[in-house]
Amino acid sequence: MKERPNVKDVGPERAAQAVRSTYIAFMGTGFALSSWASRVPQVRDHFHLTPSTLGVVLLAISAGSVLSLPVSGAIIAHFGSRRTVAGMAVLFGAGLGMVASGLLIGLAAVATGLFLLGFANGAWDVAMNVHGAALERVIGHSILPRFHAAWSLSTVAGALVGAAMVALSVPVPVHLGAVAALVVLVIPMSSQGFLAGPERTAADRANGDVDNASVDVRAWRAALVAWREPRTLAIGIFVVAFAFAEGAGNDWINVAAIDGYHVPAEVGSLTLVTFLAAMTVGRWFGPVLLDRYGRVPVVRFLALTGAIGAALFVVGPATPLAFVGALLWGAGVSLGLPVGLSAAADDPSRAAARVSVVSSVGYAGFLSGPPLLGLLGNQFTVRRALAAVAVLLVLDTMITKVIRPLPDAKQ
Image (cartoon, rainbow, N blue to C red; front, side, top):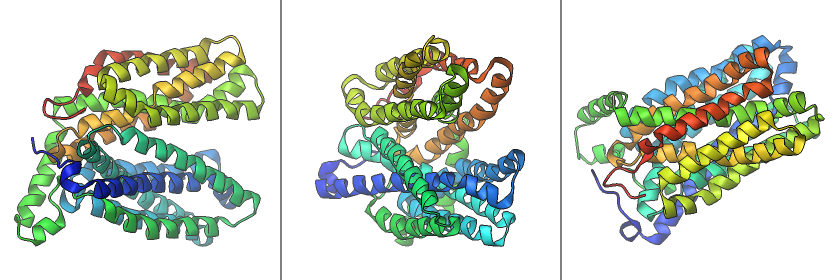
């Protein structure tokens, strides 16, 4: 296994700069995505879209991500995490700008922009997670969950700014155009603070280190081989349950509280806030537990906590217990995804390909969760359908050992 440098090798100031740049990368994508999400109702009304038509338009984001995630490992191996984040931020900004202009041009431009946005976000996501996992090895302790906490906080900030834009009657093209410009200006510049990753970068090849064609062939071969690695696929399956549980909370906990507990809409919204706050706090403080007790026992305990929380939300006889359930549920799912990505990146020389695979498999949890729970909700009510979250998290505790660090990897 190829060793990563440590703080002594790169210097504490350089390591701190890399950490700051990675925080900005995570916050940039979270803020931009939630900015778009905050204006979906206005886009729907502008084009007079039915729910089914809106669903098809929104599917463009998923289509772009589905195409991007499997190949992102090879892209990162070719360009490096730094260049990938910078390039994909520009593409993301272009896509969001096209969405903004699409309100003046037509719905096809909006859908095309969303596809570009989804494609860029997929590779951007994998690249910043690869760099974040590499930083854990450099600084010697867990930090990737805190990057994900920053992402969560930035989504809240983007949603609040979006709400303010709506309240001030700022046109959608102006709002989204400004966000697109912010992404294009800030992220490529900030990403220059990334450390050089374990991948062979374009600069390496320019210096004659290796033949360009042979590097690219090996990159694609590594990306394909990663899809046949039992440990990598097992980590992906492990992540699916947490992605499903997180997505279910984001999409359905509000609706389930309103319909299942018959509370006002504002109280239902507070259950979602409780869930998101617990998940964010868990991601911020979780690294201390990971460093002290290790991945497997901490994540297994949290999976059981999340299962208990989801079950309590489903069967609780009173609204206060629904809030307790949302709190435990959010805390329980907080570390599953970032720790799974850290585990996939244990070997830095193959991190890009493996994180790409785990992200692709895990994304299936986000994609399948909302429609599956919707179908179950039609049969059993949404609140009861959420019992599936508890079941999956309990099953996940049986395979938690797949995230054990590789022998030569630091916790």
